[in-house]
Length: 409
Image 1 (cartoon, rainbow, N blue to C red):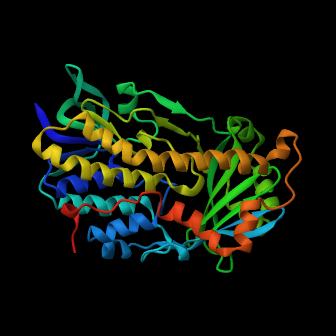
Image 2: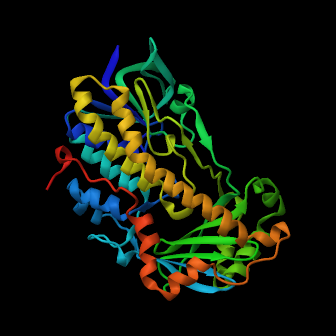
Image 3: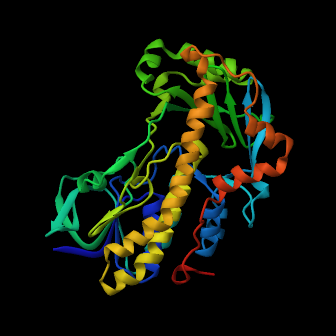
């Protein structure tokens, strides 16, 4: 019978950080990842200031610095009423006054290599979790299937679900969640970037359509906001209306939209916003998107997931070593991480309602706003206010530090 002390389901940022930290605490930990490698087209490629500080504390700062990346130091908003900076990361405390844009597979490879140096860590790729093993009234492990079709069970003291917003583990456990209505979905696409383009992040909100752009050096990673449920209809209209609408919003991109050859290159993100009422049950804990699916607004999902992992490792290392993980240990994790999650989700919901929805109001027959929203106008007039969104996005509420057992010089 296969057995480990802690089974982490999902090799994303939360899963890999948790696996690394627990292994450095001497806990036997196995991470199960359904894919064969990390070379996939992630759109969430942001590494925030608090995560960069965590990498420094883990002794991984120099290795991360060696990975090619782009630094985002500010965010600006453009609407029909004008342009204004809204977030200045140079104002946040600490060494890292920026967000790093780096391919997520490079970050995951970095974490995996560091974890593999620990004798109690195991990473099993091509291993998809298909269900939970029950041991009386508690979760006692997982069932899995490998790429070659073999099946098996891995028994454990604790299962930690880090398998994202479509978590198989969460669904299998039947944990109830609170769903928040979301008015939009996102189309992801890329266009070439020129040397004289604006730097950093650019958000352009028009009367009917909106685009958020992230500077990736030689290209822009673009998020085109659409009303939820309209993907099929818009795709049926073809590529030309899409190119035209982006060109109308950002005339300097109009010619470059020809680089998007077909809508097959435009990927849909089905935006969800939810939160488990209870993140755990006996033998099982959910963190990251498995516990709270985030909107892409602010790009904070990865940062929150990593912070969850750090809090979980600090709280669970001792009980796992002793073999006595109790539900109250997991309740402390939820209690600590609930506030930052709820606050950020509340802000995202407010932006959905009061800003993004209004920016596309004309499509619903309402008059379009003719000026910049009041908070944006205030941030332009009083630059110190740009610290608030920069701190919320780059650092977060209750940022977590690496526990002492995991730190390296």
